[in-house]
Every structure is written in C-alpha cells, then in structure tokens.
Length: 321
Image 1 (cartoon, one colour):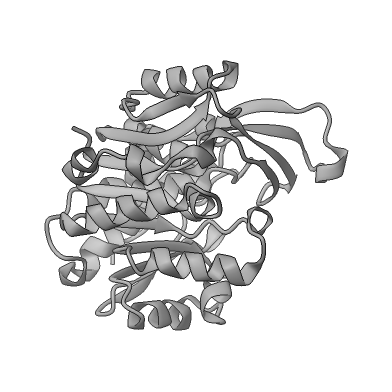
Image 2 (spheres, one colour; image 1 turned 90 degrees about the vertical axis):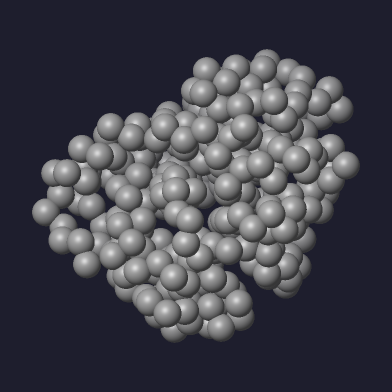
C-alpha cells in the first residue's frame, strides 16, 4: 500500500514560448501536468511509495498520463480512464520565468465521485494530498470524503490552496469551499497572494497566525525567491530559499508540496510537538524540491530526484536553525 496518496487532476499542459502573453501563444507544446499528479510523480522520484486517485479520458492523452505515471513508479490502481469525457487540458503562458497564466479546460477529472473511492486504500496511507481545483467541480465531494477518512484514521491531510480563479463561478464560492477543505487539513500550503485572499493579510507571520488560530495545525507559506514560512501555533519561522537559475516556476509549488509530504510522512509526532529544528529541516527539504523544479521548463518533466535534492542540500551553505 502507498505511504502517500495524491488525489485530483492529471492533465496536459499546453505551453507556449517563454516571455509570451496568453493570447499570443503559438505553437503550443504538450507536457504532462496537474498539481496532484505532479505531486505524485515528485514523491515517486523522492523514493516514496505513492498512489494517485483521479480520472482522465479514455483517449490518447489519458492513456499517456496513466502509462507515464505508472512508469514513474506511482500506483495507478485508482487512476481511471473514463469514456464519458476527455482528458483535462490547461493552456499555460509564461510572460516571465516567475509568472504563469492558466486557462483550464475541465474534462474527465470532474467525474470522480465519493462512491468510487476505496476507504481502506485511503486510510492505509500515512498522508493524503489534494488541492482546490478538485473542489471547484463535481469532484469536490469526493476530495472532501477522502480527507475525512484520512483524518479519521489519524493521518496527515495536506491541502494545497492553489487558487485558480478561472475555475470558480465567483471568488466568494471559492473562499467558502477552500475554507471547508482547510477545516479538514492538518497542513495547509499557500502563497502570499492566497494567504491574503483567505485572511486579508499578505504578511506570512500575521496571516499564518490567523489560520492557526482557526485550527490549522501547520501552516506553510511559499515565498518564491524568499523561501518559505511555517507556523504550527507553537513555533514559527522563515526558511531561506536556494539560489538557482530560474527557467520556469510552473511546477515549483507542487514540488514543494511533495517535499512536505515526503518528510511529514516520516514523522510520528503530532505537528505541534515538532521542534524548530525538525520543522526547519522539513521546510528546507521542500524549498530544495521547489527550487530544483524551477530550473527546467515544464511541471512534471522538471521534478527532481532525491539524489538531486540531497546534492543541493549538501552543497548549500545555509545554516540549519
């Protein structure tokens, strides 16, 4: 059985050239992607036994994604090709190396339902990962049911806010659904922009404190070139980034989430009992995963191996706090 399960969308990212706005993209180059799928592949490359729950179309793209993820070592037992819809697509523009614009075209990813889930499979894993794109469509109840089962079993539930306004009917609906997911999570990962969206505060210290006061056991804020920030209600702190040559940051957040899941799945202590050193090391590992994924074009194709992450960690002069 997998140690970590990632649930949600697997899709094809259609990338245009670097430095090009969305409406000027041509030609488009296909890459495998989808935040939860990226997390699953990243975990496999980090040496973690991982399973993926999701749906793609019974088409060439769907077959490609299932075969690719299986080839990476991801358990695809619950990754289904559904003939009722086509595989999800995302058109991605990168006007700058650190900026992406997305247009998402949902498909079979929306067909996941609670009654299709295997409770025993989900509760066998030590950690469940999901994000908000799954919540925006009819697949939302399935994601929330999986999170409830994982929490009932006493396991980690990592929720990546990953806000994509275009998939929601309006932002108040997005905020309400995201807050429902946050209430089920043990770890919430979000950016400064997403922190401000949820709390009204972009400052990592103040915003994360608000989420912790609302009951989040561990809040992790990704800060791009500035690193990351953590708060578990007892200890908080900033973890510096690793300087790298940034080519494309599209999958960096997913690699960061995978780094968190990798390290947290090895922890037996409650999150509020972790020491400052342990939390710093967990976030430092996640930062390294995110940094390396930004050094190549694409999302899934740029995800690093454990060997690459450990090389970066060994070669860094950053001090462990």
